Image (cartoon, rainbow, N blue to C red; front, side, top):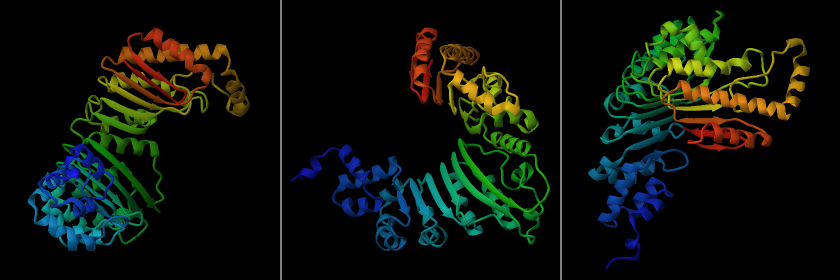
Length: 414
């Protein structure tokens, strides 16, 4: 006889599974019948559901004694596991990867998260097989108290980056401590572009699509470094690593200007030409230095020259949507007074009309210069008085386009 539970469609069970821990799914539904076994395997294979060991969920002891035998003796389950997440704050996670070598039992594993792990030679060695030919996504967040503080760890990292052959998505967080005199390489070096390139970066990562890389360094070296130049060199070398860069998300637009100003020779030829999506912030066009408010005028010329096939642009603004500025230059001595007067003038009808024209010119230039452009997304802030004038301008200037305008966001589909 078919139970009432079995009458439910598969979608209902997948929804139920989404609210349960992976171990609860196995202990509650596995071996009820063939249908449930198939649903569980399918859930593991298509969703970001897999083995998760951390403080708040399943302990390693319970996993090893109850669930590991179940999984190990079932080829369909082993083949279904696509995701493993280990939290270094749970001591048993280290046993999972370092001692039992269980990680190699999952032939279809594609996503592996190591959260707050301590960098060690054993850890790097045990990742060898996975990163050379199996994983698509690797997230490795080093423990906040774990630093690269001796020279040998640099060689682990260099080897690690040189063997990321199949990985498409990687996120790395690390801290470099150069205060120990016993490690001459770190202690005697400036953590600059050449250091990062020599000891951390790979020449090319063939399949890399998403690269999230963050370094904090601490050094007692007294040599001075031009931060803009060194950042530009590091950025140039990171951007040059992918065979074809399609997606670029960076903190500040000014960093891209520094890239071509200070480190163009370090940049691979046409490294930015295949970018289809880019995202960054632009400084205020109202308040700031006389130089910073006019950075927006370089936006479209830069994109048309270095990213000619760009399709999507996402901008983060501290205020209005136009990226060009009509603010006059202020004398630094009287900046505060002049800024207050300028701020009051922005609410006048005359100022609103000028900004409508300015925004129209910015949009027109963007669409005309980028022939494959399809979507603009701007996060910013405007007053209520500007919403309707901007809306009317867009309707008139782009009658066949779809758009959405709010006080804090503007979107345009060409």
